[in-house]
Structure formats: C-alpha cells, structure tokens
Amino acid sequence: MTPLEIGTYAIGALILLIYIGMPIGIGMLFVSFAGVSLIRNEVIATRMIGAVANDSLREYLFAVVPLFVLMGLLVTVSGVGKDTFDVFERLLKRVTAGLGIATVFANAVFASITGISIASATVFSRVAVPEMTRHGYTKKFATGVVAGSSVLGMMIPPSLLMIIYAVLAEESVGRMFLAGIGPGLLLAILFSGTIILLARTSRDFVFNNVDDIAIPDDLSVMAIIRKAVPIVALMLLVLGGLYGGFFNPTEAGAAGAFGALVIAILRRSLTGSKLWNLLVETGQITVSVLILIMAATFFSRMLALSGVPRELAEFFLSGSIGPYGFLVIYLLLIIALGCLIDSISIMLIMLPIALPVANAAGFDLIWFGVLTVVAVEIGLLTPPFGLSVYTIKSAMDDPDLQIGEIFRGALPFVAAMVAALALIIAFPSIATWLARL
Image 1 (tube, rainbow, N blue to C red):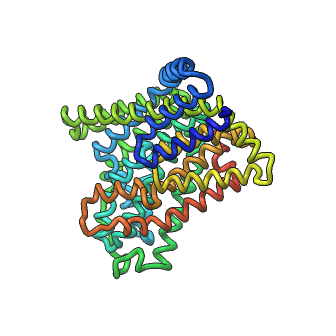
Image 2: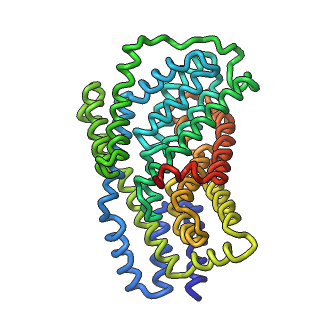
Image 3: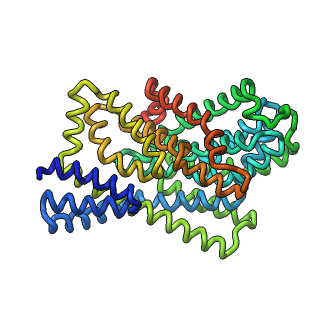
C-alpha cells in the first residue's frame, strides 16, 4: 500500500473504532502507531510516540489547563454563579422575558471566569430553571435558555476549547481568547433577541399559560454590590491581568485559581474534603485532556507522513469546490459529529486533517478557530448526544422533565448559533479585530 492509502485507511479505522466504543485517545494512538509502522517501521513508530509525548506535554503553556479547570470548579462551588444570576435578575426584572435574558448575560459573565460549558449548564440548571418556572415560564423554555446560553462558556475567554485549538494550530492563546470576545458578545445578543422574539410571537412556548407579570424578588443596592464584587474582582484579576500585559495565560490561570480559592474560603463553602475532591476532579480532567492532545499530535504527524492533508488541500483548492466550499463542508461535518461525540474529541479528530487545508487556502487561522468552536458548540445542543442537554437533565433530577423537551427548548438557540456562524463567515472582523490589535 502507498502512504496515502495507509493514511486514508487509518482515518476510516479511527471512525470505526470510535463507533464501536473505543475511547478516542486510545483509538488515535492505536491507528497512528499502526499507520507509522506500515509507512516506515515499528522502531520509528516507537521513537515517534516517545518524541510526541515529550514534545506535546512538556510545554509550559499546558499548565494553563489544570489552573483554569480548578478555577472553574472553585467558582462553581463558591456560589458565584447564583450571585451572578441574582444581579442580572434584579437589573432586568422589568424587561420582557427578563429572566431569560438575565440567564443569558449571567451565563456570559460566568463564562468569562470559568471557561467550561458543562459547569455553566450544571450551575444554571439548578439556579435559573427553578426561578424561571416559579415565575411562570415553561420548563421547555427555561431549560432551553440554560442549554443555549451555556455554550458561551467555550466562546467567551478563558475557554478550554480555545486553548486546545491554539495548541494544535500553533497560535497564541492570548489572541485566541481575544478573538472569542466579539463572537461571544454576538451570541449573547442573538440569544437575547431570540428570547424577546419568542416572548412576543410564541407566548405559549415561553410562558406557562400566564402573563409575564411575576416580578422577581427585589434586592437592595448594597446587596447587588455585595453579590457583584467577587464576580467583578475575579474578572479584573484574570482578564485585566491577561490583556493588560501583567500575566501570560498560565499566570492568569494561576491568579484566577488563587482568587477563586480565596472567594470560596471567605464564603466558607469549601471544606477540606470538598477541596480534595475538587483537586482530584481537576487532575482527572487535566490528564484526560492532555492524553487526547498527545494522541492528536501523534495522529497529525502520522497523517503528515502519509500525505493525506496535502492531497486533501489539492482536491479542495484546485477543483470546483474551492476554499469556501471546503469551509462549508468542514463546518457541516463538525456539526454532524457534534450529534455523536464530545467537543474536545471532535476538534482533536478534525483539526489535524483540516488545519493544513485551511492554511493552504489562506484562511486566517484565528478566524478559522472561532468558526470551529462555534460549530463544535452547536453539537452540544443537537440530538442524540447533546452533552449540555444531558447535563441539565442530570442536574435537574426531575423525572417529569423529558430529554426531548429540553432539545425542543434549545432549538431556537441552535438557529441563533447558525446565524452567528453565517455572520462571522461574512464579516471575519467580528472575530479578528481584537486579536490583531
């Protein structure tokens, strides 16, 4: 067999292994080792896997992964998510469907200090959904708002997906974070517009046979300030330090984790056993992410050795499909994969194949990364996998709440994300203007 045939069969074998249930990282390591062994020999394959492990995991930058994960978990435990929702609930209490919009913007702020969509889905399904249903909103709409707005966690910096993309694409993490701000705000605005439109045109979808007359409990100005101070302080510490040039991404993660720890301690929400459990969970998440990155790096080198990316670039860019035809196919494929597997796995499988083609097409890789993250996040809301939807179902622990009901509630927000994707394609500066300053 030629190297090109071996690379093509390796991609097919990986898809088959994923389909029968093999863990993504193990599957990628297996087919990569087999591919290099067939193209060259077992000795080179063994040396390459050692070199990949050394090259891909020793980077100082990777310390940012456990730090941001730990910060997100500490923020979740400390109750900052509930306080964020309470502040926006009070500020937007007289706006049409104000609790829905409050959930969106609370999620946006929470995303800026956690970077994990699943954390947002878990927190706001327990905080926002009961409050919205108490004020006359349907469970379908309430859970749909939480599911839709939870994806902001992977778009508004800091973002775990942005970090992984930056590593694989060899781009600056700081610039990727900056690139996520414009699209994140665009999504928040589109989500809010979607909520207002639904409230005015499909009241039965939004409200549970009642008018939107229930006013949330009032908060004094001092109570709002007291709840807002930890949120604002953590945002200024992490984002202000990062974009002000005081911290690099890893140092910003360390400062954020320390700040979140201080908040949790001051609020007395952290016992010794709970801290230990958070550290163990941080280690588990970090190890799983780093193994996947190592496997994806090995897979990428195997594909480069086979010549598959070069052939794909020539096929897409010299034929009638063209660069934007490739882009549309790529995004549709990512959205389709999102129905089946998780976000990180999609990126680690697709990017080693797609990045060389995108580079050959002359695409701005920062812009390409933002499109990738938005498309991947759409998969969190689409059946049958829809990780955010299943997270909400698990966190709610409500036997009367059906999975299908949450998917239907999230559908308008999927449409808003598709619209955002189209706008970012049409106007790339939405994603690139801050990153290129």
